[in-house]
Image 1 (tube, one colour):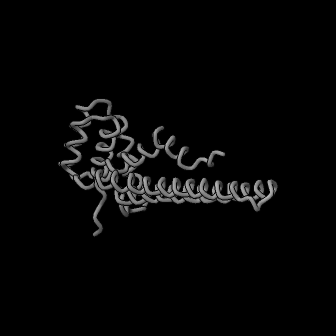
Image 2 (tube, one colour):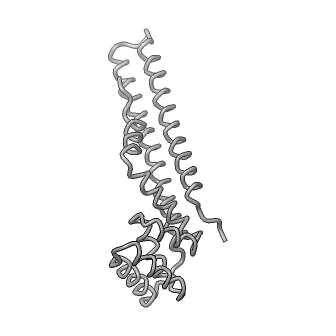
Image 3 (cartoon, helix red, strand yellow):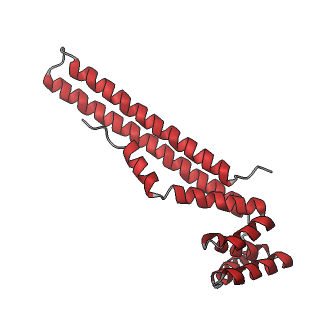
Length: 191
């Protein structure tokens, strides 16, 4: 059995990889500026040749930056897919199992208070209804009902940890700071 991601391992892996992609983009931009300076200082080139060489360099650099950005997007999508697979596993796909999970999610959505969720979670855990327990635990985590989330973590430590890791990755990669950092990292080099 493979080891599941923990919130900390997902955070460390994600931030480390993103920093690596951004470092590669920065190195690409630095190489652009060095080559640009070399072209501009080359007295053997005419002004027309310099303009053509600079345009070619800019195109090649932008292509390389977009390629690195694509690698980062593929990595993030892959990480989310891995965490989702770890969270939900190989669930039965027969009609009855699908309806059972859907029913559990629908019933969990109707829970309005933390106290009601905690009681329903205890009932689900005590009766062995994992679908309902996971649906309530997820609702508790999403609604920041700490007592519910803690009870779910206690009953299903590895699953709750993976859910927290997935929640972190999805939040981190949709955050404004992440998007701004990507915009800056993959922007076309300034003249």
